Structures are given as structure tokens and as C-alpha cells.
Image 1 (cartoon, rainbow, N blue to C red):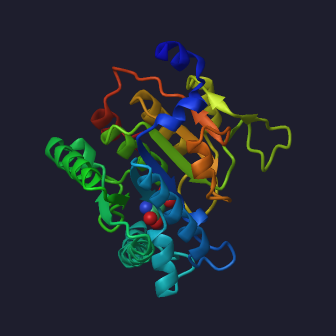
Image 2 (spheres, helix red, strand yellow; image 1 turned 90 degrees about the vertical axis):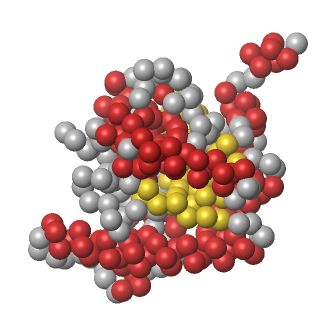
Image 3 (cartoon, helix red, strand yellow; image 1 turned 135 degrees about the vertical axis):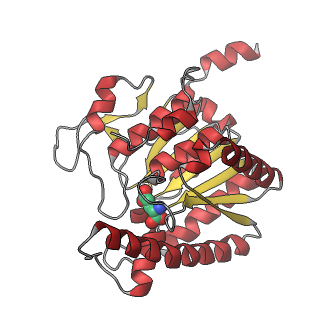
Length: 296
Ligand code: GLU
């Protein structure tokens, strides 16, 4: 009887049963477009939604961007104008060091208001590629979740340079979802989901509510898309995230962060955003995949 019901429930319905959920929010969703300052109302709503999911007994992990943006704002830099790549990297890293601490301060404060304990985990490529590092990271996440803590994850931008950087938080969040054996990843972005073309440039572009298989054609569609100018993730990085997540057995949804309430609607099985249905690929090797990131 139960089996028949499971067959009859579509992939949206079964989202209600997901137990371990990773939510990623991008820089552009966390700040006011006009000033670059943090959008406290949106942050507050995000934290409230996450605490409510935790109160339902589910495991929650937040992957958040915004460190570099918050740091730039704090030290009064609009653009990084240094002439050499080395200098640009140094400024970016310094801004991340300032901004990550500020970001955590705000998160800790709001999570504290809901009596929820949060932790910080900063990662680089080596966290996954190195066997001992990966083992330790996995243990730490597992222990935190067992203790009912919400891990808050970002790339360790202060030390991440091209040879150890993952590069964007869409990819990072999918890596985290695979590492912790999550069963759902939600990418909150400034777009509604996947379209056949960039809807900002092509009014004919149509919305794709569900992707059952990531074909080469689909992956090619994301190439060259840029997204907003604040974070680093365009559609390309989102499709790469979908590849990592679905191959690792994790469903993924891209949804618009305009209304943070979208989080509980997704978890209620509502048709929001684009759902990429998990298709575990036994040949997918996470450390190997990560070791080849950015090596063209
Ligand atoms: N890790 C970067 C930051 O916190 C953002 C990367 C991204 O937006 O994808 O500023």
C-alpha cells in the first residue's frame, strides 16, 4: 500500500519528506541593490524560515555568500581597482576577512533571537580533495547536526587563491550537500529558476519547472550566462551545482529569493522554482570532480 502511494506521489510531493536540507543564499539577495548595505529584513526572514525548518526536526545547513561584499562596504571600497592580479587578490582577501566576521556577527545575533545555535565552517577545495580534511569536515558537520546546530558555510576567501578556490557558492553548496549526504539543496537566487534562454534579454524565453535529466544540451545552455554582478554565480554555476547534487543523489531547487517564504512553500511540495530531480550516478567521484574544478 505504502509503495503504491510512493509511486503515485510526484517528485514535488516527496520533497515534504526531505530530512537534511542545504540552503544557499547569494550576495545579491542579502544586500540592498542601491547601497550595497545588508538587507536586515530579508536576513531576518531567512533565519526565521531556517529556524522553523529546524523546529520541524529537520537538519539545516546554510551556505551564505556576502563576506567580500560586506567587507568592501565596511572599509569603504566600491570597486577593486588594483592594477595587478596579486594586489586585487590581496584586497579581496582582506575584505573577506573583515566581512566574514561581520556577516557571522549578524547571523549569530538573529539566530540567537530564535534561541538557535549556529556554527561557522569555512572551506577550500582542499577540504574535499584531501582525504583527511574531507573526513574531518564530514565528522564536524555530522556532529553539529546531531547537536541540533545550524552550520553556516562559506568559502574561506581569506586564504583561497586560484589553486585552492572553489570559486562560487553555488558549486560550494552542492559540494556541501554531497559531503553531508543531504537530500535537498535549495539555491536562493535573483532569478525564478531555469529558462530556455536569459529572460532578461529574450522575452521568448520559457520557464522550465522540472529537469529530470541534465543533458549536454542543458549544460551548454548555461555557458556564458553571467547573472548579477555582486556574487559569482550565473546560470552556468547553478547547472554545475545541479550536476554535483543530482549525481550525488540530492534533489536541487533553484528559486527566487525575492520572497524568502518560498522556502516553506518548496518544503510543502508547492511548484516553486525549477526542480532538478536526483539521479544518483555511481561513477560520480566528488573529490576527483572537485580536484578538476577550474583546471581548463
Ligand atoms: N564567497 C564569496 C563571499 O562570501 C561569494 C562567492 C559567491 O557569491 O558565489 O563574498
